[in-house]
Length: 131
Length: 131
DNA sequence: CAGAATCCGTTACGATACTG
DNA sequence: CAGTATCGTAACGGATTCTG
Image 1 (cartoon, each protein chain N blue to C red):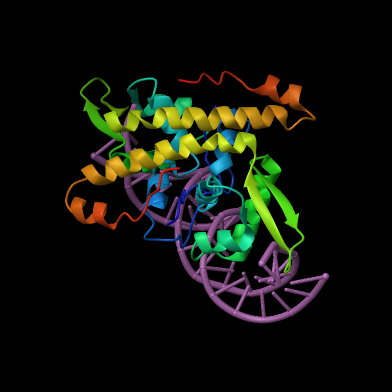
Image 2 (cartoon, protein in one colour):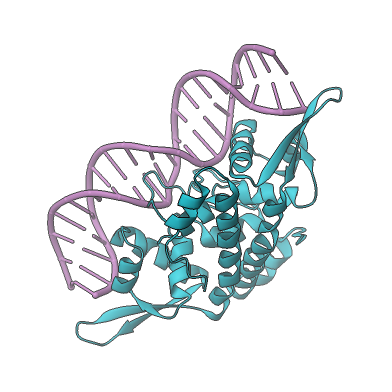
């Protein structure tokens, strides 16, 4: 399951806007998903790759680096064999959880009530374990 | 002030993901801002254009149509002179407010503590009236 | 006023191959 | 395992022009 935020690209985005820059935290098709999975605890790179199904290493790396730069996640080398890297939410990063939860709840609500194949839709909602 | 969610484009995004589709609600560089401003009450097209500063009519229209389709906002023709169109959040759309508020709060927190030009940054935060 | 239509630059993301 | 390098594509958004 993926927590994608689609279509948020902005080639020449509006600047000088405080709120915009805040939303940039969860910008990217995969970013919210990454936060979502990290909310369940620290996780290694390869584990995240597995969680996020078809994501490519390239994208995952980029998003994690960005989140690290912004202070949302931490990156830690683990001296195991083979060596791995562990990512975790920072204290402030954790605060994004309720926000994501809310958006997902609203999304599910809208999905359910947009009638038609509502039942089918709801049925197709795989384990959306709200953290 | 703009509430942009940047970099969320996805030319060939991961599909079949419930959570992804939920986050798609606030996808787009301007979408969160639109919701943000509509949270203060119904608003006409031209008013939103003014609120969202440099946004183009084309983009605003697209995002509003999308939000309308998803059931986040309503569109209503007003028979005034000149005629105008009024947009408003739906009941469910209103529920996105706390989520946006949270993200903005976290963003401001991170911005403030990422040191360096922190004071300058904080000072430059114009009226971020959390609705 | 509220938009639709066109053209176009930018870039997030995917796919693939390669490295320490 | 955890990336990095290159290439190609889709679509977001900006600018401009035109219409009901």
